[in-house]
Amino acid sequence: MKKLYFFLVAMILPVAMWAQMPSAYSLRVLNQTPWPQQYVIFGDELCGPCGSTYASVTLTIAPMSTITYPNSTPLGGSYPPTMNKGIVGAKILNGPIVCSPGGGTVGQPPCGLPPSYGYVTIVPGCTPAGPTKATWIPAQNCELPAQLIFQP
Image (tube, rainbow, N blue to C red; front, top):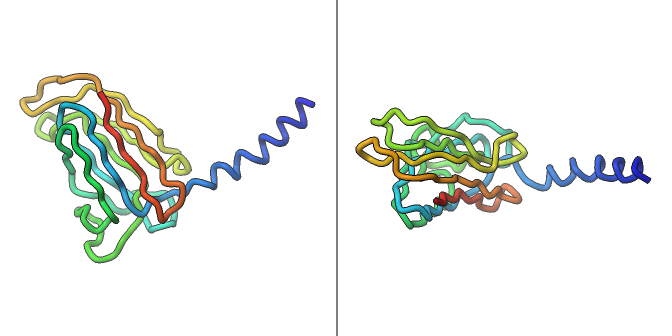
C-alpha cells in the first residue's frame, strides 16, 4: 500500500508543478509595512523559460500602498518599453542602494526560486527599521498576475 501511495504521489507531483508557469504577465505589489521597500523585477520571454534576461530599474513602493504593473512595459531597465515580456521574480533589497544593502530573491516556484525572504528593513539614513518578510504569490498561468507582498 505504501508503494502504491508513493507511486501516485510521484506521478501527481510533476503535474502539480507544471500547473504553475515560469513567468507571469503582470505583477501586483503590496507593501503592508510602515517603511518604503526597494526591489528589482526580473524575467524572460512571456510563457517561456525561467531566466533573468530582463531586469527593471530599482523600484520603490511607499509604506502601506499597492502598485499594479499591468505588464512589463513600465518596468524600465532592460525590459523593452513596447513589447511585453515575462515576470519571473524579484530581487529584494534590504534598503536604499546608498546603504549598500544586502538582499534576497523571491519568485516563481517552477524556476526554483524561494517563495519568501525575511530581512530587517533599512530606511533612508541607513538605520535598521524592523523585521520584514517579502512573499511571492505565483501566477497560476502566464496570462495572470503574480503578487509580491511585503509584511512586517
